[in-house]
Image 1 (cartoon, helix red, strand yellow):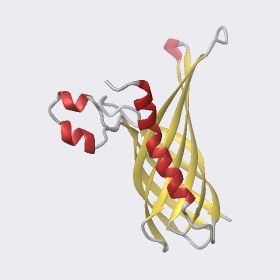
Image 2 (cartoon, rainbow, N blue to C red):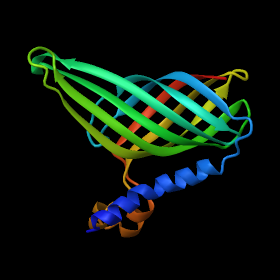
Image 3 (cartoon, one colour):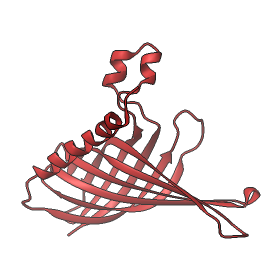
Image 4 (cartoon, rainbow, N blue to C red):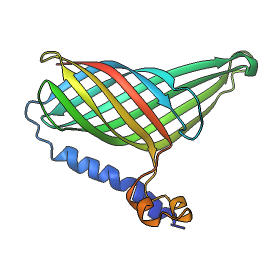
Length: 196
């Protein structure tokens, strides 16, 4: 079993690689974009169930083939029988690596995410419980540019990636488990961005 220092180092290694890639991106012709999006999230792939729809927005910064996206989504749901309201607000920071820079731009993405959930009563004393989970995400997508200032994008993200999972060794996959990450959730997004 790895000690805490090894686990902390392992969690920060992809972030260090992400910072190095962003640091080497060319600053020429940088664009800033602000937009809105819809996201369909399945928080646990092992449980059968429908995807939950989130509404959110993103800020995209980039130049050429590299960019960064900061996204915030929101979903709330009430459960009358339990007297509970559940509010979820995931925040994701993604490095975007564009595979082409024309009107149609496929891209890969990777980055960290913070997934906050707050449970509060509908009626009665104002006692709420909040939790925040951290997880890496990765995926790919496609952005179609409708001129210089507007883009429409859609992508798929694996969320809560788990690198070098020790559980894979128990089921007889020691080599494959170290090469391929597992994931706990998934997310489809569809959005539009206005660039300045």
